[in-house]
Image (tube, rainbow, N blue to C red; front, side, top):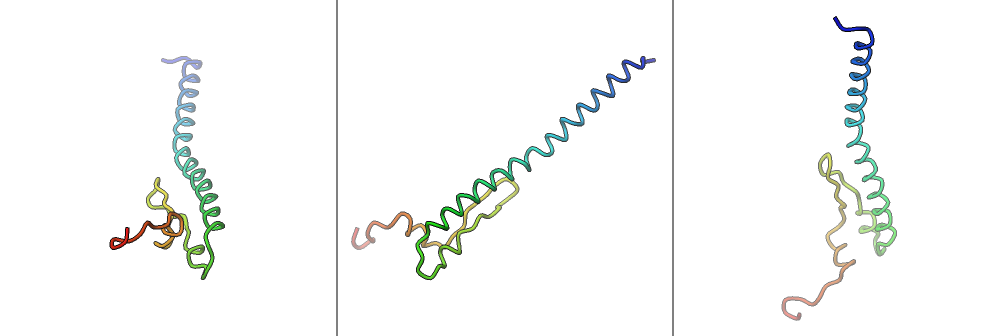
Length: 93
């Protein structure tokens, strides 16, 4: 039969193991929240810097959760041309 001290140590060890498991359960959502906050700040900057004609491009810039651990930034297709420009066409490079 185990002594009271041994049982207390086992109980303490079980409690420690449970606390570590709880930390692990919370860690990924916490990291995901931090990533979301940082990316949202970037989206806000992109939106502020977007040129305004009709405002459609500015309004289209949005953060999207693609799956539980993957984020994407979505905007109208011509936003890339606004940002990077184009170099000619096929007929006139």
